[in-house]
Length: 588
Image 1 (spheres, rainbow, N blue to C red):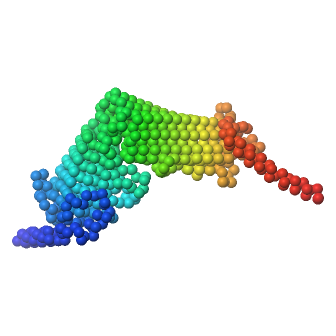
Image 2: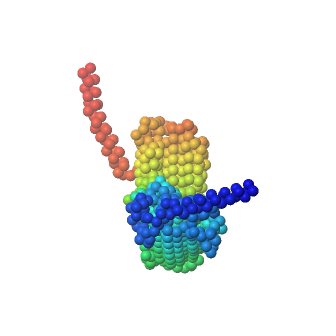
Image 3: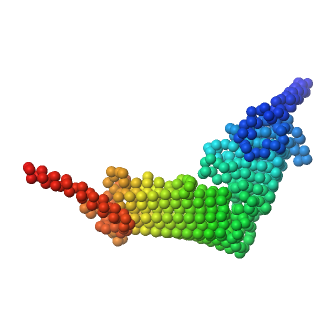
């Protein structure tokens, strides 16, 4: 009797709660007098607010169990034939982190005819066995710069069997983000990339990571296009058809061979498992990836212009790709090569004159790559070249006015030859956790803050025949963990300016030679004076035992001319003092 009475009491309480929900202001139909509505209209001028006047106004909705559908009073029973229906809601507003959150449920549902605005407007996760639709909604992504990593219109994680169709999604960062999701059909949606006040943010229409068996058909983008982070099998099961960005088709070229793409008919170009494809004479802008090459062989990209993209040119897990004569401006990364082999980047310009982004050229986890005759300058938040690879050759490049001219880390056997690393804000060359380095015949001049060449944690390296001139920090710094470096035949001129240090170089490593151990030839030091040796700052107490009398590498004629001029001025200034001194001696 007591058990039955308790159950009757529970049913009665549930009925009362349900009745209160149905009759509460939560289901008010008035949109005109609600302050949330006014905020949404003011903050979302692009959204279509003429679809209906009858919205249920709620700041946010969280569904974390099946009972929440009942407690919210949503129609439907959660089956495939009669799913729960989230319809005609107006959710979110300025300052709302997540407007609609759904996770860890087993009932089927649809989201339809809603207006939603938040940092993440719709967040759905961990429901791989649930079918749901997101249909005919107006979705607006809000949030500040500091919420950039989570800012999405729609975000799906570990979901399956989804239909997303007929939605209008306005976002400043990501329109639709899908992670570890499968069997999603995305059709007839419009993705609007909103102009962001902080120009460092690059918009992505649709971002895919570890998704499989998904299709994207007849979607429209104002900018951004697709971002793809997939393995070979996931790419192979991907369908991208009849999508457009700025009224030009997005090309997803799959399993093609011997094709020339040279007419400006595509708004974004993505190649997968292709061979001998040539992409030339394209102007592509305002995309996450301008030209993407994935798991391909012997493709060529040349004479293109990539402007205001996140990745201007992206070569991923490909072999023997040639990238040459391209102009990349105002991209977060001009050219990026990752997990590639035997590639070449020649005669490209990767600059950011009108903004401050990251890297001109990024070379990561690749082998046997040639980087030659590129101009990588004005990448103020990053590096002219960022290198983390094996057996790469960096030759005849100009890297100026970046944070670092070149930044190498976790690399092996790189050769850096005949480059100009000048006037960079943090330093000329930064080498971290890299072994078997060859730094030969480079110009390293007028770099600020940390100086010319900075090395930390590396075994075996050679620094020779470089011109190292008037850097704010040391000309060469060997920090702790730097072992068995040989530094010889370099010309050091007036480094560590604005400092009273007694040496132009520093060594806190172990077993390093500041002269060639076989030829017994050291380096030229402009401040050596009459001493036959040159002491190096640092805990290693290193000494160049065989310093050069004359520079092995001469500075420019202009620099020599200026130095001679100032030397002459100094002599002229000393003449009156000498005359006065002699006159005093005579009087005495």
